[in-house]
Length: 124
Image 1: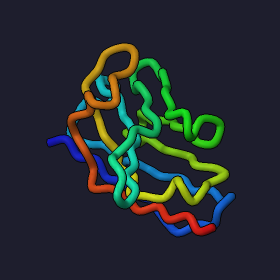
Image 2: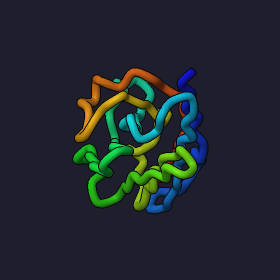
Image 3: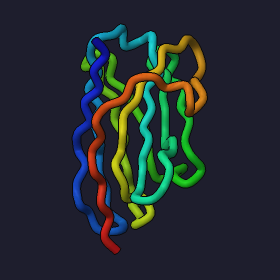
Image 4: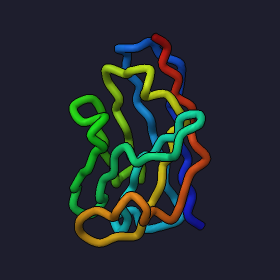
């Protein structure tokens, strides 16, 4: 059974940093791409960043480029999202998701498995 467990969400002031973690289990880590998504109140869920566990390719939403960094540790089956220079508009529930994929990266709507989410709140 595929399981994704997020952690690291917190309340932080604007300009601050957080690191989210996504612990994955129940599948062969290197066969999947892992993505981070977020959903703010009243808004649709949006893709933030994703990484291919097999070849390390990364993709970021324009709104987070230069501030967020996604990385993976295949020894720990864990994907991280380092978020720097946080802004109030970065607030929301952050979800980790997985998609079975070969080389390259899936589209944002191709992720099949989801975690329960972790709350990020950014105060101004």
